[in-house]
Image (cartoon, rainbow, N blue to C red; front, side, top):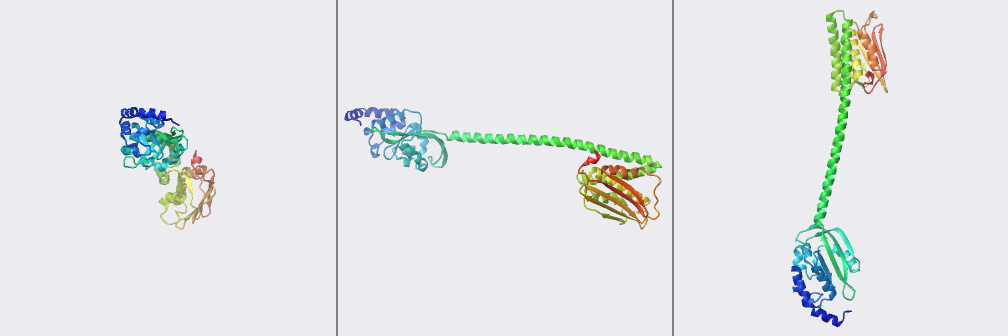
Length: 397
């Protein structure tokens, strides 16, 4: 307990306390001139030494501080705390806590209760939505609520030591967003670089494949020209043979190009190869839809050209009643193909086998990793091919 003599000493020092408040700045002057008799704290002259000491300490500190004291938790704050209150700084002095912070009272109440029960409360970057300046704003705070006691040692309120961290939190969030954005850009750049490397690798493969295909095409063209000239009886015959075979080769190549360059559908291939010979409907086609790789397509196209040319000169297309049946079968990757002519009476096996025969029976068979043969039957020639379907140009590698 404080003795009567002690209170007498306090009474003698009231003027000194008020003068100290006035000298501490605008907030201290307002505290000194405020009518505290209208509050539960009573006139300034009756304030206890504990309350005076707390207020004096606050007025000399540059740290934002506020004291909520007495039965209604009456508001007292220093000048550094005034900007935190915003526009309500002019009306908050001497008001109860629930009026000062009416907009966030429900948010801070659990912490206030903890401090009044003797617990020191610490929070970092606590988000609070305030209307301190007349409009709603998101704010952030780092603060402590410390219980304060009266002269009898009883908890009489709590001291709020606070720093507003709104700008720091917003800046940190912006930096985090910028870092995430930068990380995203870095990741996008990494993906783009990986895609570029993949594209370059693919281009390298495509260039290699293009060179390989060109070499294969040139080899076929060279064989067509050289073998056609070698087997010709005259320059005119050689030119005619070379031209016809290269035209057939070109039609097959056009079909491959239209299909993407790697495969051709067999029925379309047959139609393209036989288009110069289909002056009448004398062909019967029977077989499932199947795709041949580039080498197999080109080889079979040339074989069809040779067969159709021979049929036009000597076989089914030369005789008015002649017909050609073309059939093929597929079982897994097993492939069989047949060309059978009918309506050709008195067909005799030739005494000389030229490049066309070797092309049809040997070269084309190699593209299918199989075998091929021409059979001269009583009513027309038959050509049989068996082998394997291949997904790429492995047969020609």
